[in-house]
Image (cartoon, rainbow, N blue to C red):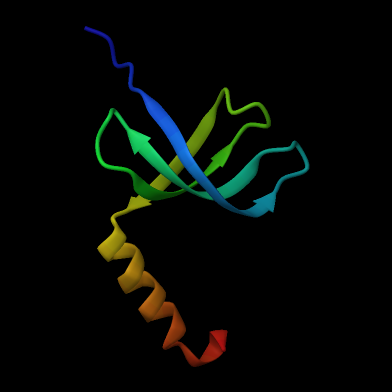
Length: 76
């Protein structure tokens, strides 16, 4: 049994930052193992051959995160 998984970057939304080695922290919509696409934040190698640990959000979770961030006074 292998631990392989499939992913497809469905939509590139934004590059949030870039390291001196070219790795980019990105917000994308990604389909993991042919499941429903989710919002995804993680670092990617310049050629996307490697990825760092990340976090995914459903549409509903992303909406809640947006609302939470918009209500913070220090971010306005």
